[in-house]
Length: 261
Image (cartoon, rainbow, N blue to C red; front, top):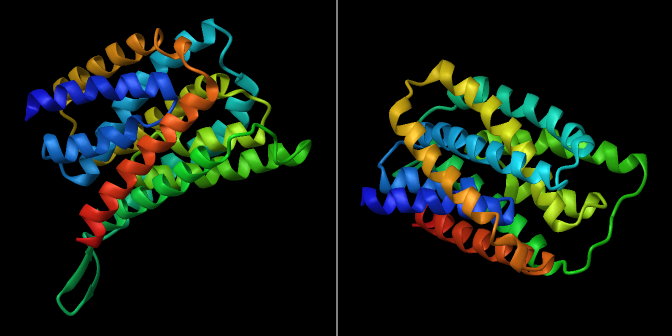
């Protein structure tokens, strides 16, 4: 089972580098189901793995002029503040048993993974159904929306321990002039900020197995380096649709397993 886990972590980097999102979609379930980590620890480790992997990817993308630093800062700064606050104060304050009605129990695990799954399904729909590329907001209003959505997505991804690429990509594609591949590079830079600064909040609250974590991150980095050769072979629409389908399938699986069953 652990060998499958190691191979899967390599795939996290491959997917993240190719599609700009989906790393945390796989890394959280991999750490929970294949390495038997609890949800808070898995989400913390996911932030580090995805953050280090995205850092590598964003540096590679920057050298090919596929990272928009202005948009990265406009979206990333409020997102970073929100995700750090969420990981440091909100997550530790959520009780293990959120709600109990008779024999029915709604746990912290169900809350976090249920929210994760719903966000994934909603994001996947926008990626799959919207084929044309056009800005839906123009001028300064776009910057206002970027700041606002940056804070909201930071809060939400902080809750689930995700880098947030599967939510950030749709925002950048439809609120900016970025083509999908440039949106991928910019998203990787934002994910780097979100994940690593969010992880700093977890270092305060959790005991970290650094040897295991560094090994997982190294495998994912190998995946994102390999992804550089794959993206050149596919169109923007094909990559966007592929990300949408992956996000949708994983979201439905987690929702059924953790909430409905």
